Length: 151
Image (cartoon, rainbow, N blue to C red; front, side, top):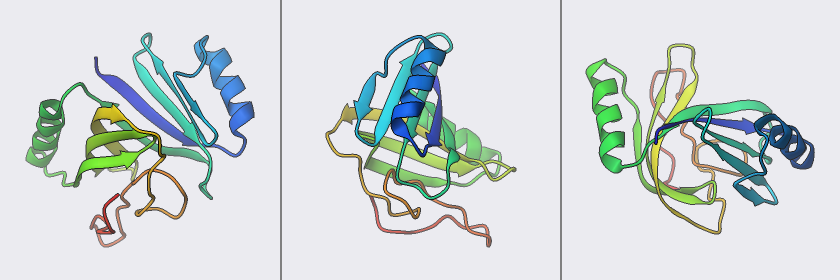
């Protein structure tokens, strides 16, 4: 199943968990001290919230897919349209190990397109942004993706 992915940086995890639990009518699928996730079937959404970033609000959007082949198809389709991005293999973040292809839309919104292979017990490193958390690449003003250390 493909799911739309939303990741929001929050100030107060406890209050935010209460809000999104009420909104989705279900408890989080994954709950950690600094992170919560809801895998909702209707609508098909992977909603994540986390603390630890200076900027609060929308962190990034994405598409969660069921296979590396689907990630590759997304990458090829975007590249054919002239949209370049950054590929990450076996990135460890948000308590999961995933293969990813990051891009930026014309409004500067970052999109994480990914397939998760397994769940892990660590949040992961933050080599692309200024907070603690996932390895989200940034698109610089000169039109290039960051080339920081791997996750």
